[in-house]
Image (cartoon, rainbow, N blue to C red):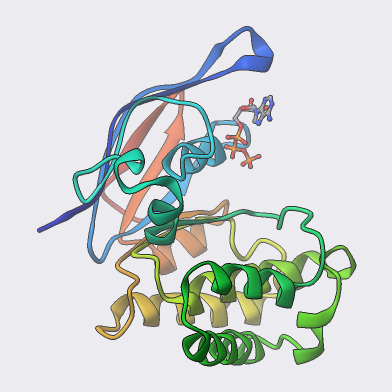
Length: 231
Ligand SMILES: Nc1ncnc2c1ncn2[C@@H]1O[C@H](COP(=O)(O)OP(=O)(O)OP(=O)(O)O)[C@@H](O)[C@H]1O
C-alpha cells in the first residue's frame, strides 16, 4: 500500500516560550483510506502538528508526501495535494467568491473554473449554505458559515489527496455535523474523487468513533495510537 503521508521524527517548539518543546519525534504513516482521528487535550499540540504537515509551522524532521518532501514538489503544488482547512477561516479580504476566483485563476482553465465553481456552490447548498453568502465579506459571515464555505471549497476543488481538517464541524448544529461527515466520507470512498485520506482533529469521542479508521491521541509531547475507537 502506498504511503501517502509519512512523518519522520517531527518535533516542534514554542518560540514564544523559550523554545519549550510542544512535541518531539512524532512518527506516523497515513495510507489510502485512512481517516486519522487526532485527539488530545486543549493545548496538546494537535493544530501545531497539522500546521507542520501543511508546512505552515516550523518543525524539525521530515514530512513526506508520496515519498518526497513539500519542498521537492514546491509548496503551492504540495498544498494542492495536502490541503489544510483551519478551524477558523483566516480574515481574508473580500468575499468567498473572490477567494475561489483567485484560487482557480492560479491553475485551472476558465471552462473548468466555471464548472468547479458551480460544484463548490452546489456542495455548499447541500450543506444549507445560502447562495448569497458567496458574495458576502468574510468578516460578515458566522463561524459556522465560514467553516462550511472553507470546507466546501477544499472538497469541491477535488485536487487534494489528503485533507488536514482542524475541528471542521466545531461550529455546526448536530444535523449539519452528520451531513458534513457523510459528504467527506462519501468523497473519500469514491473512486471518482482525488481524496484518499483525512487527518481529522476532533474533541468529540462520538465523532472520532463515527468517522475514524485510526485513533491517535496527542499527549505528553507525543502521539499514541489506540487500537479501538474512543466510544
Ligand atoms: N502562535 C502561537 N504563539 C505562541 N504559542 C502558541 C501559538 N500557537 C499555539 N501555541 C501554543 O502551542 C501549544 C499547542 O497549541 P495547539 O494550538 O497546537 O494545541 P491544540 O491541541 O490544537 O489545542 P486546542 O484543542 O485548544 O485547539 C499551546 O501551548 C499553545 O498555547
